[in-house]
Image (cartoon, rainbow, N blue to C red):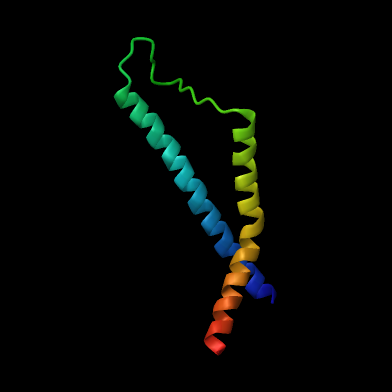
Length: 88
């Protein structure tokens, strides 16, 4: 059982790294597109304005926290359901 748990946590954190890498890549893509598309004289290429309200920040935080917290259990349940499907 401990070996299964360790395997699940390893897979869960691989998925978490993939999702966070995707979000980071999207943020990088946003900054590069702003560099290419913005020709105003007051734009320096280093300062980006992303305005978020407090409810939006809370939603992002709880989405990432909830995903990270539940991911090992979700993967464990998914593996168990696949194992049950093979037996029947």
